[in-house]
Length: 134
Ligand SMILES: [Zn+2]
Image (cartoon, rainbow, N blue to C red; front, side):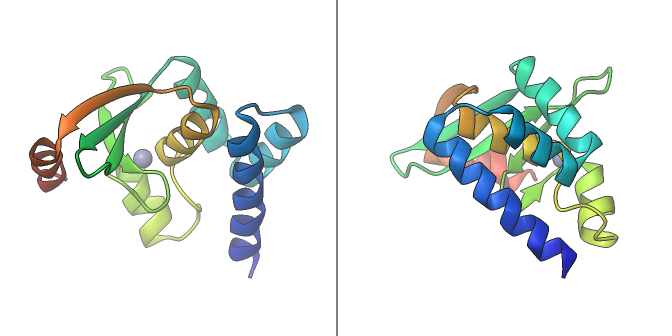
């Protein structure tokens, strides 16, 4: 199972980055090997501060809002681990199983590990309304 081995390797690297809040060349190389073009896109999004963490209180639940790279700068609601509202997630990840995740999920994961996101606080009710629109 190539896919699950890749997932495990990726998970181990994310954990390393989580603990240091920095990413070294070896880690970048491996992530690029695993995710290819999607990882390049993710790093560009993070560099452009395209990841917003929407945190709800009092529950502490959160979701990421990630700005896409198209000219329209669409924003996608995204759970780093298992969901993105973009087309690629449904087409490449869910339907065809060709990718482990989309670049917005990668951007959210990378931003979370590096702490390089903008945080917005909302109420639980506001978060519920956002989620209901997905
Ligand atoms: Zn996406």
